[in-house]
Length: 128
Image 1 (spheres, rainbow, N blue to C red):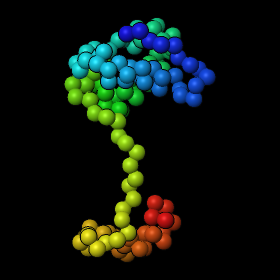
Image 2: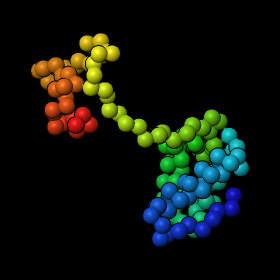
Image 3: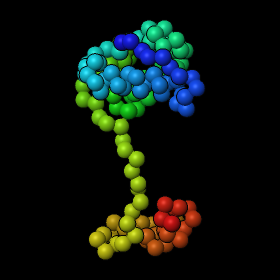
Image 4: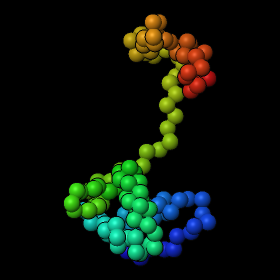
């Protein structure tokens, strides 16, 4: 694994840059499923960063679903990695015509909430 130089002036944090470089190697197939990733100390030396930066990069890759952590063994490329979640809008439709009453009515405190009542409630800005 030959790392490219990290850019400290870039908007991305160092651990994100390290994680992105490893992610590219995984997606290109340089690192195959089941391959063991370099140790934290080795990666720290290769990138000339702190151990906490490498650990944070590995945590980010784990959150992205690309690697697994095996206690007392190390970090490995997942057998089946998934794409990182896309930015999704979690807004529900205001129309309830296609939903049965239990699906669109739920108890909120001492009253039942409906899409219309949620739209006017400031605690739920996604409806506005």
